[in-house]
Length: 491
Ligand code: BG6
Image (cartoon, rainbow, N blue to C red; front, side, top):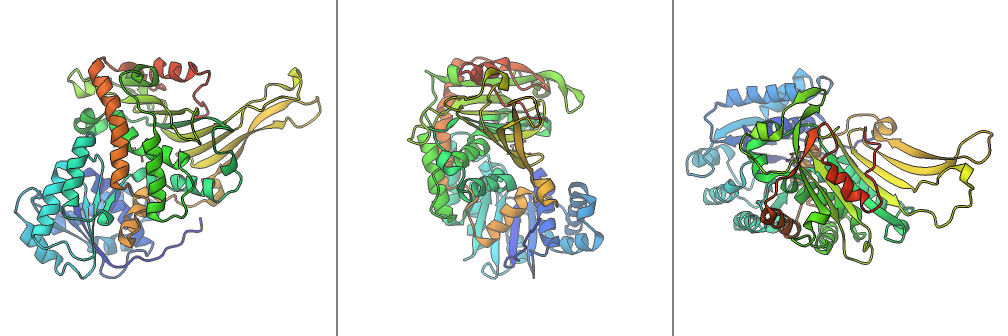
């Protein structure tokens, strides 16, 4: 890998929710790795904040443990850990009340001295109170930014409330709405593939593309997050954000530059062009599922309903036939699917091209299979272009379907940085290209809300599927009705 590390300006990152899972699992390890790479310089520091009473020393110890747990042994050593831990401190603040803010103000000092980033890794109900608390106590200086994590609301209306609350203190250009999928290397590579090659763009339309599949499959279940997950479900948790963002990157028109608004304007147009799904077509174009007991990731697992234990109707799987009503894509279905406790963890975009208009080969040559471009987002990141070739050697013209296979690990080696590493540094740099603008979030909810409402009105239970499979059989039927199949090279 030919990574280039350009140090960012000194900053203060104030993490609300500093004792939460996201901070320990993702944020601290990502910052540690950036510090180790030499990107974090000077007096930059991380101030963790939460309601819990905890000493600075205890938090430093917790940081050390998080790094030892979540950073691979060959990516850390004692000197690096000690230097990083020195940058970390802790202040107890009640985000919803008044306690602790004065101490935080003293701890932080001059609000204009450095870039100051507020990271809200907390329940969205706290977004408003925390932003107001920060403003009321004079913590929001000239170089302040705020990062908010999903879920941004549960529907269009509640998203408005979140966005208004944050927007009352921060201007839109100071607000960074994280969708960590946009920080994944391969997701960014999608833009390179489409717009740095002359090869694909002329074919990237309904004249040449038959359909697109976007799969984000997980083998884990709701795990320790059932309390949140059961109020969300797969549509809100994965489709409203990650999957629709992927769909935008596949379907958008070429932006004029990588400028944040140029890219986001094009993504917005895709979201606005999605064909509505509501009571009339919801049964035909969506499938909801919920996992049952089975085997996943090598062991026996129980049913979602047993894990949650409340007669839940929440979907842990969804597949959707989406359509984009514009000149480029009319008539090209985008089959979307995501779920927990599926057969394996894999995220993939499959672009299936149209069949050749006429085969000059006789029946003995074998079937001519259509070309496919497969972009593997994780794991084993890479790109495969499936082509027909002649099977080498004598025996006449026998055709074979083979992939032109580029595995990023083999081609570039090295470590694939976590999405949070890139996104956190982009916030400090002030580059919002890989973050969602408010109108994108709104447009995504406007498409998702009628699906949720139609499901709710019907009131039927999600279809059950055995853990460790690819979801309910209705999901297979959804695509097979159209004479197509889910791409199967998913192991
Ligand atoms: C999160 C969802 O946004 O993304 C989780 O809330 C999901 O439910 C996770 O597990 C998947 O992220 P990744 O990076 O592991 O594919």
